[in-house]
Each structure stands twice: as structure tokens, then as C-alpha cells.
Image (cartoon, rainbow, N blue to C red; front, side, top):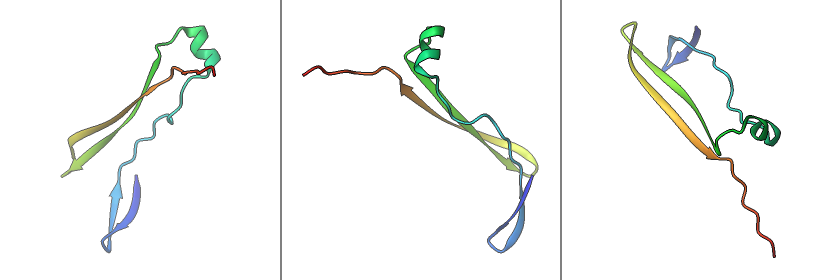
Length: 71
């Protein structure tokens, strides 16, 4: 929990710590034969009246394939 000022009032925020955004190295992707895309995300929990009223997921997919051009 974190106490912080909001509009001149002291409010408490409930925080959840999850692993950071990270991707696989080229070697790890090759060894594990991973898919060419990596999806990362996080979720925001909206708490109203002491209960979770909504969960808002934020997701991003990254294409890990590399395109090379020979001139």
C-alpha cells in the first residue's frame, strides 16, 4: 500500500508488483523455438468501496522477426 496526496487529500493506493517488461534474446528465442511475436502486458485494478470493480488490461504485441535488405 502507498499513501499519497490526491487533490489535497491523503489517499491510499494498493499496488501490485509484477515482473518488468522484457523479451527473449536472439539465442533464447532460437533455443526455445519461440513464436515470432512476444506479447507483454499489465493490468490495472479499479477499486471502489473496497472492492475490485473493474480490471483494465493493457497489452502490446511485438513482432520479433528481423527484416534484412541486401543492396
